[in-house]
Length: 353
Image (cartoon, rainbow, N blue to C red; front, side, top):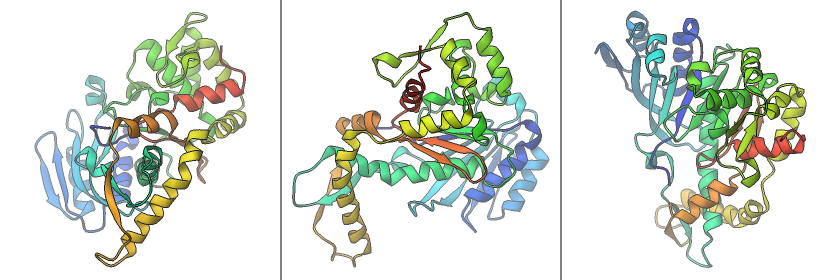
């Protein structure tokens, strides 16, 4: 099981960073929630006014003076209330230690976000696979919602790209559990950014903002037939070549998106688990709607075992979500990475070499 809450990252340039931070904060914080702000300079405040917080940040932000705040939010998908931490880092701090430049964490501990146990029916055999599928449904909508609240709270387009992981570091996009791209036509940047980051050993947050053309040039400049290792795939997809990335970069974006859509179909193991998972979710709804002590009989089941985690790591489905703004989100459960989705799509297109 995860020992960390999910971490969300967003990239934007220095000129629009505070505006992006302000928009994200307004989209995240529950109306009237207490906001605790601390700047690196030890300036800070506690208030329920978003405007007061933003005014202080705009006065003190810069140099090595970053903004860190804690507050409360309401998750629309799961209807859960949760503490969040939102941070905004200056370019100077990013050069010293890349953390963002915008970073969001949800919950104070892993168990605030990920369910440790669920209620299951007291009759019939248990199914680890079905219970794992329930765990997926309980958090997946929240993951996508939070990524969009951070990266696309409005139509400004200030944030071109972002991602989510439980690894406390913005790694190669294909090693994350979710990515956001403001322009679906540039979706191949996830693959190119991953290749450049791994091959050149560069922090993603330092290079996330460079153009797709510049990423293409850096891949092209690598030695012919160079390969980089990939995690989370089959024996046949443990690495990817320079040539595969270059072919993907010249593939029409609509074709690439269609291949990812086709690759996102749930596998047989997941489809077999879904009917019992839906039964458990129906039971949970009945218990939630019933008066205290009057719901159907049930008992608590631990869903943090290695069997539950392994099933999510190997079978959690992928979601390719086209946004009305023209952007796209790729997502799966935080215990899995996006690389199997990319690998399958590249195979479908005949690009793997």
